Image (cartoon, rainbow, N blue to C red; front, side, top):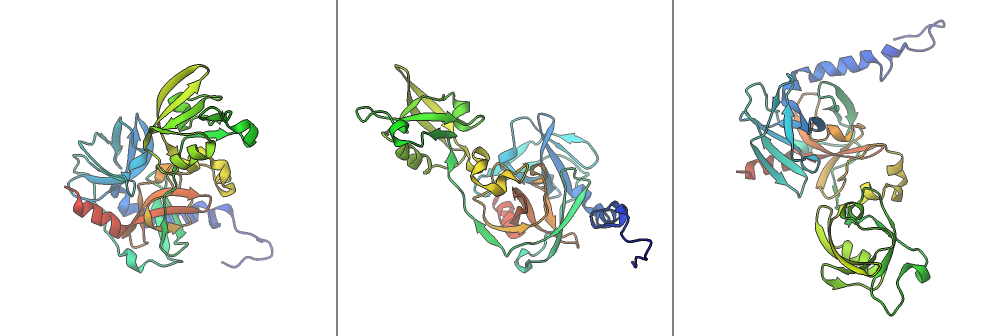
Length: 316
C-alpha cells in the first residue's frame, strides 16, 4: 500500500494489530477449532485442551486442574471427563470424554523448528488465534524449588531466637502462600521440618529448597508457649515471590508453574495462563507443541510435540 501526502498513516483496521490483519490470520485457524476445547473448573475456565484422538482424548496443563472439571467443546457443549491421567514431570494431563464432534490435531515435526519460524495458537477464547515467532532455540527449563512463603528477619540479631533455644522466628507470612494456607503466623518459631531440628533461618531455607512445589512438608512450630504440628504444601517460587524478578512484576498474569519442563520451545505470543494446554501450530495447521507456561512478559513456553506424543504412546 502506498500512502499519499493526505494519507500519512494506515487506518486502525489496516495496522499490524488491526482487525483486518487479525481476520486474515484467523482464516488459517478456522479448520482447527474443533480440535481445541476449554477446560472448566467449577464452571470457570482454567485452561485450554487439545484433542489428540478420535476416542475423545484431550491433553491439557495439569497444575491448573481442580476437582470439579468440565470440558466445553467448540460447539458450546459441556462434558465431564471419565478418565484423568497426570504426568507431573512435564505438567500435562490426559483427559477423556465421550463426544463425536471433536477432531484430533495433526502432529508436525518439532525437530525442524528453528528461531524465526512463524507460529499460531488459540487465545484464551478458543475461537480466537494469535500469531508470533519461535524466539529461541529449543532449551531446557529446570525446576525451581518450592516456596513456603515466609520471610525471616534480615538482621541476625533479630532474626533468630536466642542461642539457648532452637528455632527460627518468622518475620512475615506471604498472603496466599503455603504457610498462610497452613495457618502459620508472623512471630511463629519453626523448630523442626520433616523431623529435622533447625536452629537458624538458613537451615529452614536449605531444607525447603530440597523440595519442589506441590510437595507437603511437616513442621513443628512454637507459638507463644504452645508447640504445634502443621502440614504445608509448598507453592511455586515465582508465584509466591514475584518481586524477586523485575521482569515478572511487569508481566501481568503468568502461569503458577513456570519451570521444570525439561526441553521446551519458546515463542513470543503473550498468551494468558488460561490459554495454556492449547496447541502451538505452524501455519499449515500441524501441531509442533502444547503451550504449557506463560513464562514472563515476552515469552510463552511449549512442550515439543515429540515429547507429548511419547507421553500419549506410553499411557494405558
